[in-house]
Length: 91
Image (cartoon, rainbow, N blue to C red; front, side, top):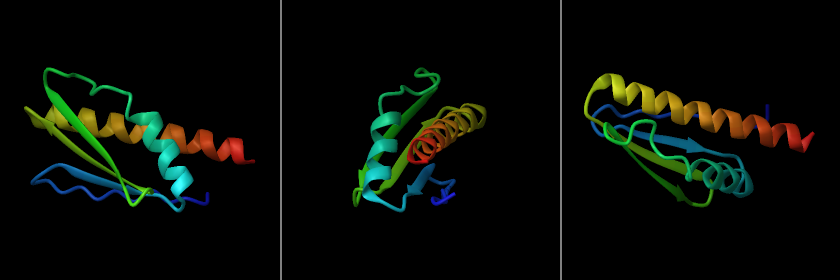
């Protein structure tokens, strides 16, 4: 794989960073995942930002640890699916 997803989780504010090798991949992933609402909108919130055109920063808040874990795993799964799809299209 050409891209390596690096996840930085800061427990105090639930911030995640997903840097991509190129602007194009960052934009594709961001535009694909930003339309997805949080898994459970009554228990979690999700704020996504694209910075420097290739770094996705996500801030997820939840009312409990279980909801936070579900939201983070859901986001990571979505990003992984988009990255895999982009890589297949490049081949």
